[in-house]
Length: 276
Ligand SMILES: Cc1cc2nc3c(=O)[nH]c(=O)nc-3n(C[C@H](O)[C@H](O)[C@H](O)COP(=O)(O)O)c2cc1C
Image 1: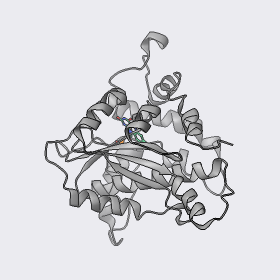
Image 2 (image 1 turned 30 degrees about the vertical axis):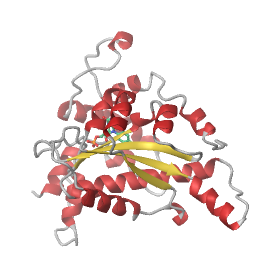
Image 3 (image 1 turned 90 degrees about the vertical axis):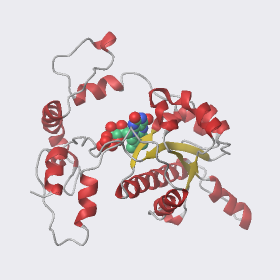
Image 4 (image 1 turned 135 degrees about the vertical axis):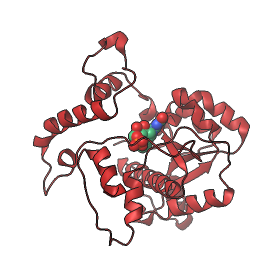
């Protein structure tokens, strides 16, 4: 069986095939078998390659061509050292050969209005939503492009743990905010772990949203994941005890039993965004 099929079995518990005649079957196979990477060797990532990856990331689709995302390459060691403790358990990311922050940017749009003396009539939630989408698309494209070159990557939402501090450290003006950081480097070892996903039955809908496969989809996934990638540690055992049947759904419920980044909305308000 080919690598795409094998990857889909690991990912979805079910073999999927794509025609060998597809123009870039290799690319689909690469994404099917991808995984985040949290261990890099010391080899640097060249500026040339990083620039090319930024360019590819920014070549991705952008809502109405508004181009509401920017990328900050964090090169200064001192700055990385200051950011590191703000990343909690993901502090290692600030030590990666390359460390980037993907930002949403609705400031430039407002500058266009000032430039042309044309009023900006979208001071509500939608511009923020679009900028978040643009930043996420650029991040995902960077990840895919980097992985196609053999690099390992890991997005880091913990860059939003201390938004005010990160904001000041990165000099972010009004209407510019961090979406996620990204650790990039050459992976240690050849094989990444393939993280199983919910089945397509539970996540891909035909014509209309259909919740009837949610519950069985979760149950099927819990069982498959328990077998393929059991959790090494249980979360919040102090609150919920040790479970004999620990699974993805319980892990995620335990995870979000605690409030995370509850201050991010008020940070965005301070940046000037209207959330309604
Ligand atoms: C927006 C975003 C933020 C993330 N933030 C973190 C993070 O702060 N720390 C971390 O270790 N992994 C982070 N990840 C990586 C996810 O944990 C990882 O993608 C997920 O566990 C699935 O694993 P996989 O990418 O290997 O398939 C993030 C991923 C995304 C897309």
